[in-house]
Image (cartoon, rainbow, N blue to C red; front, top):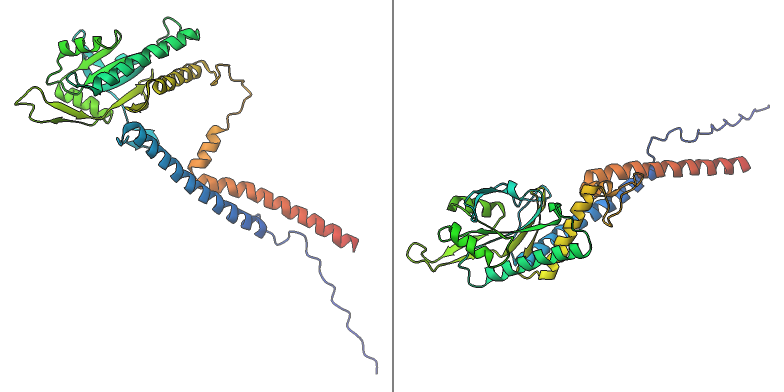
Amino acid sequence: MSTSTPSPTPRSTPTPGANKGPIGWTSLALVSLTGAGLLYYYDGERHRRLDARKAEANQATNGFQTVVAGGKAAVGGAFTLVNAANGKAFTDENLRGRFAILYFGFTHCPDVCPDELEKVAAVVDDVDARLREAKEHVDGDDTLTVQPVFITIDPYRDDKRRVAEYVKEFHPKMIGLTGTEKQTADAARKYRVYFRKTGDEKAKSDYLVDHSIITYLVDPNGDFVTFYGKNTTEKEVADSILGHVRAFRSAARGENATGTSTPFATVNVSPFLWCVRDDPARVVVVVVVVVSSIGRHLERKRQRSSFFVDDAS
């Protein structure tokens, strides 16, 4: 009796990539690992930058904190005061078109205010001299000048005549501003200036005013740029302001930091790097796109290798 042996069922050769989705397991693993690593880096970098900003602010201001909102310092803004020289209204608009260095103090200040205003005056002259020496100063170009401004926080005693005489002791270009108690308080609040009268100002006229010792730099657009504390040296302030003045002029002329015109073909990748660095969601998107492409490339490479191995066998 003969028996027939059933023929083996032929194996079906799977089509390469038949059951593969757009992202394979390799890609998914790479996305997960790389994304987790970048998110960890982002979180650490964000905290590092915040700590650095806090440390810098504390060092520059002796503990005085600058309020930051939305990534931009919430310092400065519109104000209305009185020009002590002519008694006319003076607003922040009067400072547009030039850099201004502002200091809040009071004329009866025994030592700190005079020291800081002398430093301000020296800085203004130093910046002007260095620009002229480098043949960068152009008559009529106010963006290359720095206007010193003194704003009193003691209008009760600092009337127009007293402030006008006071600022002449420091620099011929210095503008002295006073106003009502509300006007000066509003201006001080805009710049986050702390001040408090000590003693009973109604009973005597020799009281002091405790206040933060900060000098503020404002650009020709009226925007707050930076601030300098009491411990910042004259040279450090001058170097900083000179850098901001040159950077502002270069930006207005469409030049780079060296003063040469920026080629049209040059690609500025800074905005891309910053947007990825500051937004974890965008980090994930970029990682998914890039790593998925790498994963698909590796998968195709594996399939080609498998094909050649099967063909050789």
